Length: 462
Image (cartoon, rainbow, N blue to C red; front, side, top):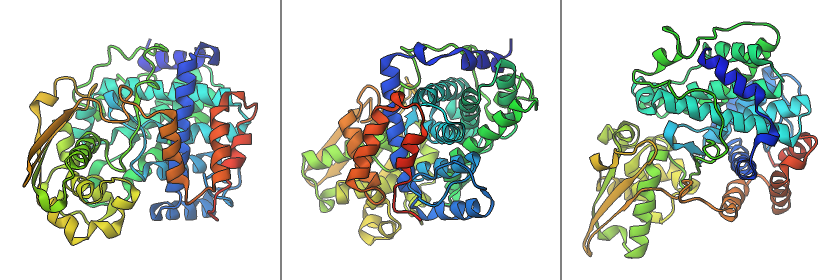
Protein backbone atom coordinates (compact mmCIF):
# COMPACT_ATOMS: atom_id res chain seq x y z
CA UNK A 1 0.00 0.00 0.00
CA UNK A 2 1.33 3.44 -0.88
CA UNK A 3 1.53 6.30 1.63
CA UNK A 4 -1.25 8.23 -0.08
CA UNK A 5 -3.47 5.14 0.06
CA UNK A 6 -2.82 4.64 3.78
CA UNK A 7 -3.58 8.29 4.48
CA UNK A 8 -6.73 8.00 2.37
CA UNK A 9 -7.95 5.08 4.48
CA UNK A 10 -7.48 7.11 7.65
CA UNK A 11 -9.27 10.10 6.09
CA UNK A 12 -12.19 7.96 4.96
CA UNK A 13 -12.56 5.78 8.07
CA UNK A 14 -12.17 8.30 10.92
CA UNK A 15 -15.52 9.39 12.37
CA UNK A 16 -16.56 12.13 14.80
CA UNK A 17 -17.34 9.58 17.51
CA UNK A 18 -13.68 8.51 17.37
CA UNK A 19 -12.54 11.92 18.65
CA UNK A 20 -11.93 12.60 22.33
CA UNK A 21 -13.53 15.54 24.12
CA UNK A 22 -10.07 17.09 24.47
CA UNK A 23 -9.43 16.94 20.72
CA UNK A 24 -12.86 18.41 19.97
CA UNK A 25 -12.40 21.26 22.44
CA UNK A 26 -8.91 22.03 21.15
CA UNK A 27 -10.15 22.12 17.56
CA UNK A 28 -12.76 24.71 18.50
CA UNK A 29 -10.08 26.74 20.31
CA UNK A 30 -7.92 26.68 17.16
CA UNK A 31 -10.93 27.58 15.00
CA UNK A 32 -11.63 30.69 17.10
CA UNK A 33 -8.02 31.77 16.68
CA UNK A 34 -8.30 31.34 12.91
CA UNK A 35 -11.55 33.30 12.67
CA UNK A 36 -10.05 36.24 14.50
CA UNK A 37 -6.95 36.33 12.33
CA UNK A 38 -8.90 36.00 9.09
CA UNK A 39 -11.29 38.79 10.07
CA UNK A 40 -8.44 41.19 10.86
CA UNK A 41 -6.30 40.02 7.96
CA UNK A 42 -9.08 40.76 5.49
CA UNK A 43 -8.67 44.44 6.44
CA UNK A 44 -4.97 44.41 5.48
CA UNK A 45 -3.71 46.13 2.37
CA UNK A 46 -2.36 42.84 1.03
CA UNK A 47 -5.87 41.33 1.07
CA UNK A 48 -7.45 43.99 -1.11
CA UNK A 49 -6.06 42.71 -4.46
CA UNK A 50 -7.40 39.26 -3.60
CA UNK A 51 -10.84 40.72 -2.95
CA UNK A 52 -10.68 42.54 -6.28
CA UNK A 53 -9.87 39.31 -8.10
CA UNK A 54 -12.75 37.59 -6.33
CA UNK A 55 -15.15 40.32 -7.40
CA UNK A 56 -14.03 39.83 -10.98
CA UNK A 57 -13.72 36.05 -11.20
CA UNK A 58 -14.93 34.50 -7.96
CA UNK A 59 -18.47 33.82 -9.05
CA UNK A 60 -21.53 33.77 -6.84
CA UNK A 61 -21.53 31.05 -4.23
CA UNK A 62 -22.12 30.42 -0.56
CA UNK A 63 -18.56 31.15 0.50
CA UNK A 64 -17.88 33.67 3.26
CA UNK A 65 -14.92 36.03 3.23
CA UNK A 66 -14.66 36.46 6.99
CA UNK A 67 -15.58 39.95 8.11
CA UNK A 68 -16.73 41.03 4.64
CA UNK A 69 -20.45 41.66 4.20
CA UNK A 70 -20.71 41.79 0.43
CA UNK A 71 -18.47 38.98 -0.81
CA UNK A 72 -20.04 35.54 -1.38
CA UNK A 73 -17.70 33.75 -3.79
CA UNK A 74 -17.37 30.16 -4.89
CA UNK A 75 -15.74 28.02 -2.19
CA UNK A 76 -12.21 27.83 -3.56
CA UNK A 77 -12.07 31.63 -3.80
CA UNK A 78 -13.39 32.05 -0.25
CA UNK A 79 -10.69 29.64 0.91
CA UNK A 80 -8.05 31.61 -0.99
CA UNK A 81 -9.08 34.90 0.63
CA UNK A 82 -9.40 33.60 4.18
CA UNK A 83 -6.19 31.57 4.02
CA UNK A 84 -4.14 34.52 2.81
CA UNK A 85 -5.78 36.93 5.25
CA UNK A 86 -5.31 34.77 8.32
CA UNK A 87 -1.61 34.26 7.58
CA UNK A 88 -0.85 37.95 7.07
CA UNK A 89 -0.76 38.87 10.77
CA UNK A 90 1.97 36.32 11.64
CA UNK A 91 -0.12 35.36 14.67
CA UNK A 92 -1.32 31.98 13.35
CA UNK A 93 -0.78 28.62 15.01
CA UNK A 94 2.22 26.30 14.49
CA UNK A 95 2.96 22.57 14.62
CA UNK A 96 6.46 22.71 16.08
CA UNK A 97 7.64 19.31 14.88
CA UNK A 98 6.70 20.22 11.32
CA UNK A 99 7.54 23.95 11.49
CA UNK A 100 4.38 24.97 9.66
CA UNK A 101 1.07 26.78 10.14
CA UNK A 102 -1.92 24.40 9.92
CA UNK A 103 -5.01 26.50 10.65
CA UNK A 104 -4.53 28.87 7.73
CA UNK A 105 -4.65 26.06 5.16
CA UNK A 106 -7.15 23.75 6.87
CA UNK A 107 -9.91 25.96 8.28
CA UNK A 108 -10.35 28.05 5.09
CA UNK A 109 -10.94 24.76 3.26
CA UNK A 110 -13.28 23.39 5.91
CA UNK A 111 -15.29 26.59 6.30
CA UNK A 112 -15.75 27.08 2.55
CA UNK A 113 -16.94 23.53 1.85
CA UNK A 114 -19.08 23.31 4.99
CA UNK A 115 -20.90 26.42 3.74
CA UNK A 116 -21.20 25.20 0.16
CA UNK A 117 -22.51 21.75 1.03
CA UNK A 118 -24.50 22.45 4.18
CA UNK A 119 -22.30 20.45 6.53
CA UNK A 120 -22.72 20.29 10.30
CA UNK A 121 -20.40 21.51 13.02
CA UNK A 122 -19.40 17.90 13.69
CA UNK A 123 -18.50 17.44 10.02
CA UNK A 124 -16.31 20.53 10.09
CA UNK A 125 -14.50 19.56 13.30
CA UNK A 126 -13.78 16.05 12.02
CA UNK A 127 -12.48 17.22 8.65
CA UNK A 128 -10.29 19.81 10.37
CA UNK A 129 -8.78 17.25 12.74
CA UNK A 130 -7.96 15.11 9.69
CA UNK A 131 -6.30 18.10 8.04
CA UNK A 132 -4.13 18.74 11.10
CA UNK A 133 -3.15 15.06 11.22
CA UNK A 134 -2.10 14.88 7.58
CA UNK A 135 -0.25 18.20 7.79
CA UNK A 136 1.57 17.23 10.98
CA UNK A 137 2.52 13.72 9.89
CA UNK A 138 3.74 14.77 6.46
CA UNK A 139 5.48 17.91 7.68
CA UNK A 140 7.37 16.03 10.38
CA UNK A 141 8.34 13.23 7.99
CA UNK A 142 9.79 15.61 5.43
CA UNK A 143 12.06 17.31 8.01
CA UNK A 144 11.25 21.05 8.02
CA UNK A 145 14.90 22.12 8.12
CA UNK A 146 15.43 20.28 4.85
CA UNK A 147 12.35 21.76 3.22
CA UNK A 148 13.45 25.27 4.17
CA UNK A 149 16.96 24.58 2.89
CA UNK A 150 15.45 23.66 -0.49
CA UNK A 151 13.84 27.10 -0.58
CA UNK A 152 10.24 25.99 0.07
CA UNK A 153 7.74 27.16 2.67
CA UNK A 154 6.35 24.05 4.42
CA UNK A 155 3.01 25.73 5.17
CA UNK A 156 2.28 26.17 1.49
CA UNK A 157 3.54 22.94 0.02
CA UNK A 158 2.42 20.57 2.79
CA UNK A 159 -0.70 22.62 3.45
CA UNK A 160 -1.94 21.65 -0.01
CA UNK A 161 -2.08 17.98 1.08
CA UNK A 162 -3.83 18.89 4.32
CA UNK A 163 -6.39 20.94 2.43
CA UNK A 164 -7.01 18.09 -0.02
CA UNK A 165 -7.49 15.72 2.92
CA UNK A 166 -9.93 18.10 4.62
CA UNK A 167 -11.84 18.63 1.39
CA UNK A 168 -11.97 14.91 0.63
CA UNK A 169 -13.64 14.20 3.96
CA UNK A 170 -16.23 16.96 3.57
CA UNK A 171 -17.00 15.90 -0.01
CA UNK A 172 -17.51 12.28 1.09
CA UNK A 173 -14.86 10.83 -1.20
CA UNK A 174 -14.12 7.11 -1.02
CA UNK A 175 -10.60 5.76 -0.46
CA UNK A 176 -9.72 5.59 -4.16
CA UNK A 177 -10.99 9.10 -4.82
CA UNK A 178 -9.17 10.46 -1.78
CA UNK A 179 -5.95 8.82 -2.92
CA UNK A 180 -6.42 10.50 -6.28
CA UNK A 181 -7.05 13.86 -4.59
CA UNK A 182 -3.73 13.59 -2.75
CA UNK A 183 -2.03 12.58 -5.98
CA UNK A 184 -3.52 15.53 -7.83
CA UNK A 185 -2.67 18.12 -5.19
CA UNK A 186 0.94 16.97 -5.11
CA UNK A 187 1.32 18.49 -8.56
CA UNK A 188 -0.14 21.80 -7.33
CA UNK A 189 2.05 22.38 -4.27
CA UNK A 190 4.07 25.59 -4.56
CA UNK A 191 5.47 28.06 -2.02
CA UNK A 192 8.82 29.79 -2.43
CA UNK A 193 10.76 31.41 0.43
CA UNK A 194 12.14 34.10 -1.89
CA UNK A 195 9.84 36.66 -0.24
CA UNK A 196 12.48 36.90 2.50
CA UNK A 197 14.76 38.73 0.08
CA UNK A 198 12.25 41.34 -1.04
CA UNK A 199 9.64 41.91 1.68
CA UNK A 200 6.86 41.04 -0.77
CA UNK A 201 3.44 39.59 0.10
CA UNK A 202 3.76 36.13 -1.42
CA UNK A 203 4.16 34.28 1.89
CA UNK A 204 0.69 35.48 2.83
CA UNK A 205 -0.69 33.87 -0.31
CA UNK A 206 0.81 30.43 0.38
CA UNK A 207 -1.84 28.91 2.69
CA UNK A 208 -4.71 30.47 0.76
CA UNK A 209 -3.39 28.96 -2.45
CA UNK A 210 -2.94 25.61 -0.68
CA UNK A 211 -6.58 25.69 0.45
CA UNK A 212 -7.72 26.72 -3.04
CA UNK A 213 -5.75 23.88 -4.62
CA UNK A 214 -6.89 21.33 -2.07
CA UNK A 215 -10.52 22.04 -2.91
CA UNK A 216 -9.87 21.86 -6.66
CA UNK A 217 -7.97 18.57 -6.28
CA UNK A 218 -10.76 16.95 -4.26
CA UNK A 219 -13.46 18.16 -6.62
CA UNK A 220 -11.50 16.81 -9.60
CA UNK A 221 -11.03 13.47 -7.89
CA UNK A 222 -14.74 13.33 -7.08
CA UNK A 223 -15.44 13.77 -10.80
CA UNK A 224 -13.10 10.94 -11.78
CA UNK A 225 -9.76 12.65 -12.41
CA UNK A 226 -6.78 10.55 -11.33
CA UNK A 227 -3.46 11.29 -9.64
CA UNK A 228 -0.43 9.12 -8.83
CA UNK A 229 -0.87 7.04 -5.69
CA UNK A 230 2.92 7.17 -5.24
CA UNK A 231 2.90 10.98 -5.11
CA UNK A 232 4.71 11.11 -1.75
CA UNK A 233 7.35 8.36 -1.85
CA UNK A 234 7.86 7.95 -5.61
CA UNK A 235 11.29 8.53 -7.13
CA UNK A 236 9.89 11.67 -8.77
CA UNK A 237 7.45 12.35 -5.99
CA UNK A 238 6.88 14.99 -3.36
CA UNK A 239 9.44 13.91 -0.76
CA UNK A 240 12.27 13.72 -3.30
CA UNK A 241 11.37 17.09 -4.78
CA UNK A 242 10.88 19.11 -1.60
CA UNK A 243 13.33 17.58 0.88
CA UNK A 244 16.75 15.95 0.88
CA UNK A 245 16.61 14.43 4.38
CA UNK A 246 13.23 12.84 4.96
CA UNK A 247 11.98 9.85 6.92
CA UNK A 248 8.70 8.38 5.70
CA UNK A 249 8.68 5.29 7.94
CA UNK A 250 6.23 6.71 10.48
CA UNK A 251 3.93 8.23 7.87
CA UNK A 252 1.36 5.47 8.22
CA UNK A 253 -1.91 7.35 8.50
CA UNK A 254 -2.67 6.13 12.02
CA UNK A 255 -4.66 8.50 14.25
CA UNK A 256 -4.35 8.69 18.02
CA UNK A 257 -6.34 11.02 20.26
CA UNK A 258 -3.42 11.13 22.69
CA UNK A 259 -0.85 12.10 20.05
CA UNK A 260 -3.16 14.09 17.79
CA UNK A 261 -1.41 16.99 16.07
CA UNK A 262 -4.34 19.17 17.12
CA UNK A 263 -3.01 18.77 20.67
CA UNK A 264 0.58 19.42 19.56
CA UNK A 265 -0.17 22.81 18.03
CA UNK A 266 1.24 26.06 19.42
CA UNK A 267 -0.41 29.49 19.49
CA UNK A 268 1.49 32.73 18.85
CA UNK A 269 1.22 35.66 21.27
CA UNK A 270 3.68 37.83 19.28
CA UNK A 271 2.82 39.17 15.80
CA UNK A 272 5.85 37.76 13.99
CA UNK A 273 7.64 34.62 12.82
CA UNK A 274 7.52 31.57 15.09
CA UNK A 275 11.31 31.53 15.40
CA UNK A 276 11.10 34.86 17.24
CA UNK A 277 8.51 33.82 19.83
CA UNK A 278 10.77 32.31 22.48
CA UNK A 279 13.38 35.08 22.33
CA UNK A 280 10.68 37.73 22.61
CA UNK A 281 9.20 36.03 25.68
CA UNK A 282 12.65 36.34 27.27
CA UNK A 283 13.39 39.91 26.17
CA UNK A 284 10.04 41.13 27.46
CA UNK A 285 10.43 39.30 30.77
CA UNK A 286 13.96 40.60 31.37
CA UNK A 287 13.06 44.18 30.43
CA UNK A 288 9.98 44.23 32.66
CA UNK A 289 11.57 42.40 35.59
CA UNK A 290 14.57 44.74 35.75
CA UNK A 291 12.73 47.83 34.49
CA UNK A 292 15.21 48.38 31.69
CA UNK A 293 14.99 51.50 29.55
CA UNK A 294 16.31 51.70 25.98
CA UNK A 295 19.12 53.94 27.26
CA UNK A 296 20.23 51.15 29.62
CA UNK A 297 20.90 48.67 26.80
CA UNK A 298 24.43 47.97 25.56
CA UNK A 299 23.89 44.70 23.67
CA UNK A 300 21.16 42.10 23.24
CA UNK A 301 22.56 38.65 22.40
CA UNK A 302 20.00 36.17 21.13
CA UNK A 303 20.63 32.44 20.66
CA UNK A 304 18.29 30.38 18.48
CA UNK A 305 18.35 27.14 16.49
CA UNK A 306 20.25 27.00 13.20
CA UNK A 307 17.11 26.56 11.07
CA UNK A 308 15.80 29.91 12.26
CA UNK A 309 18.93 31.94 11.55
CA UNK A 310 18.46 32.45 7.78
CA UNK A 311 14.79 33.19 8.34
CA UNK A 312 14.97 35.83 11.11
CA UNK A 313 18.64 36.72 11.66
CA UNK A 314 20.64 36.55 8.41
CA UNK A 315 21.89 38.36 6.42
CA UNK A 316 22.54 40.57 9.43
CA UNK A 317 22.68 43.86 7.53
CA UNK A 318 19.30 43.23 5.90
CA UNK A 319 17.66 42.13 9.15
CA UNK A 320 18.87 45.35 10.80
CA UNK A 321 17.33 47.39 7.99
CA UNK A 322 13.77 46.16 7.36
CA UNK A 323 11.95 48.07 4.64
CA UNK A 324 8.40 46.92 5.36
CA UNK A 325 6.21 45.24 7.93
CA UNK A 326 6.88 41.91 6.20
CA UNK A 327 10.62 42.41 6.62
CA UNK A 328 10.02 43.35 10.25
CA UNK A 329 7.98 40.20 10.92
CA UNK A 330 11.06 38.20 9.94
CA UNK A 331 13.71 40.32 11.68
CA UNK A 332 14.81 39.20 15.12
CA UNK A 333 16.68 42.49 15.46
CA UNK A 334 13.48 44.47 14.91
CA UNK A 335 11.49 42.26 17.29
CA UNK A 336 13.95 42.68 20.12
CA UNK A 337 14.13 46.44 19.55
CA UNK A 338 10.37 47.04 19.71
CA UNK A 339 10.08 44.70 22.70
CA UNK A 340 12.48 46.95 24.60
CA UNK A 341 10.96 50.20 23.35
CA UNK A 342 7.26 49.40 23.73
CA UNK A 343 7.21 46.30 25.95
CA UNK A 344 4.69 44.93 23.45
CA UNK A 345 5.05 42.90 20.26
CA UNK A 346 1.61 43.14 18.69
CA UNK A 347 0.25 44.42 15.40
CA UNK A 348 0.76 48.07 16.27
CA UNK A 349 4.48 47.47 16.83
CA UNK A 350 4.79 45.84 13.39
CA UNK A 351 3.20 48.71 11.51
CA UNK A 352 5.07 50.09 8.50
CA UNK A 353 5.44 53.46 10.22
CA UNK A 354 7.30 51.93 13.17
CA UNK A 355 9.80 50.21 10.87
CA UNK A 356 11.46 53.50 9.90
CA UNK A 357 11.65 55.14 13.34
CA UNK A 358 15.22 56.21 14.29
CA UNK A 359 14.91 54.91 17.85
CA UNK A 360 14.05 51.47 16.51
CA UNK A 361 17.02 51.59 14.15
CA UNK A 362 19.32 52.58 17.01
CA UNK A 363 18.29 49.61 19.12
CA UNK A 364 18.43 47.14 16.21
CA UNK A 365 22.12 47.92 15.91
CA UNK A 366 22.59 46.59 19.44
CA UNK A 367 21.02 43.19 18.68
CA UNK A 368 23.21 40.19 17.79
CA UNK A 369 21.97 36.73 16.86
CA UNK A 370 23.84 33.45 17.20
CA UNK A 371 23.29 29.75 16.77
CA UNK A 372 22.75 28.08 20.12
CA UNK A 373 24.24 24.64 19.59
CA UNK A 374 22.93 23.49 22.96
CA UNK A 375 19.41 24.37 21.77
CA UNK A 376 19.50 21.93 18.84
CA UNK A 377 19.22 18.63 20.71
CA UNK A 378 15.43 18.27 20.67
CA UNK A 379 14.54 20.57 17.76
CA UNK A 380 11.98 20.62 16.17
CA UNK A 381 10.05 18.99 19.00
CA UNK A 382 11.25 21.83 21.21
CA UNK A 383 11.95 25.40 20.07
CA UNK A 384 14.13 26.70 22.91
CA UNK A 385 15.92 30.05 23.00
CA UNK A 386 18.40 31.91 25.16
CA UNK A 387 18.82 35.67 25.61
CA UNK A 388 21.55 37.72 27.26
CA UNK A 389 21.10 41.49 27.71
CA UNK A 390 24.15 43.56 28.62
CA UNK A 391 23.15 46.82 30.29
CA UNK A 392 24.44 49.66 32.43
CA UNK A 393 22.72 47.91 35.36
CA UNK A 394 24.50 44.60 34.75
CA UNK A 395 24.07 41.56 32.52
CA UNK A 396 20.81 39.61 32.63
CA UNK A 397 20.18 36.28 30.92
CA UNK A 398 17.54 33.57 30.72
CA UNK A 399 16.56 30.50 28.72
CA UNK A 400 13.19 29.10 27.69
CA UNK A 401 12.32 25.58 26.55
CA UNK A 402 8.65 26.12 25.76
CA UNK A 403 7.61 29.59 24.54
CA UNK A 404 4.25 30.92 25.69
CA UNK A 405 1.57 29.33 23.52
CA UNK A 406 3.23 25.92 23.27
CA UNK A 407 1.05 23.01 24.46
CA UNK A 408 3.40 22.72 27.44
CA UNK A 409 2.95 26.44 28.21
CA UNK A 410 -0.46 27.14 26.69
CA UNK A 411 -2.76 30.09 26.35
CA UNK A 412 -5.94 29.34 28.29
CA UNK A 413 -9.37 29.66 26.69
CA UNK A 414 -9.67 33.02 28.46
CA UNK A 415 -6.35 34.18 27.00
CA UNK A 416 -7.42 32.97 23.57
CA UNK A 417 -10.66 34.96 23.87
CA UNK A 418 -8.63 38.03 24.85
CA UNK A 419 -6.48 37.56 21.72
CA UNK A 420 -9.61 37.10 19.58
CA UNK A 421 -11.22 40.26 20.93
CA UNK A 422 -8.01 42.22 20.36
CA UNK A 423 -7.51 41.23 16.73
CA UNK A 424 -11.20 41.54 15.78
CA UNK A 425 -11.88 44.87 17.50
CA UNK A 426 -11.73 46.82 14.19
CA UNK A 427 -14.12 44.34 12.54
CA UNK A 428 -16.73 43.15 15.06
CA UNK A 429 -18.44 45.02 17.89
CA UNK A 430 -18.58 43.48 21.37
CA UNK A 431 -21.97 41.89 20.79
CA UNK A 432 -20.78 40.26 17.54
CA UNK A 433 -17.62 39.06 19.25
CA UNK A 434 -19.62 37.49 22.07
CA UNK A 435 -21.97 35.66 19.69
CA UNK A 436 -19.07 34.35 17.61
CA UNK A 437 -17.24 33.06 20.68
CA UNK A 438 -20.38 31.33 21.93
CA UNK A 439 -21.04 29.88 18.48
CA UNK A 440 -17.57 28.41 18.18
CA UNK A 441 -17.67 26.93 21.69
CA UNK A 442 -20.90 25.14 20.72
CA UNK A 443 -19.75 24.28 17.21
CA UNK A 444 -20.41 20.54 17.44
CA UNK A 445 -24.06 21.28 18.28
CA UNK A 446 -24.72 23.06 14.96
CA UNK A 447 -26.74 21.08 12.41
CA UNK A 448 -25.69 23.61 9.76
CA UNK A 449 -22.33 25.36 9.86
CA UNK A 450 -24.01 28.15 7.87
CA UNK A 451 -25.67 29.30 11.11
CA UNK A 452 -22.22 30.39 12.33
CA UNK A 453 -21.14 31.67 8.93
CA UNK A 454 -23.93 34.22 8.99
CA UNK A 455 -22.22 35.72 12.04
CA UNK A 456 -18.82 35.71 10.33
CA UNK A 457 -20.08 38.19 7.73
CA UNK A 458 -21.18 40.68 10.34
CA UNK A 459 -18.09 42.86 10.15
CA UNK A 460 -17.52 46.35 8.81
CA UNK A 461 -15.90 45.41 5.50
CA UNK A 462 -17.83 46.17 2.32
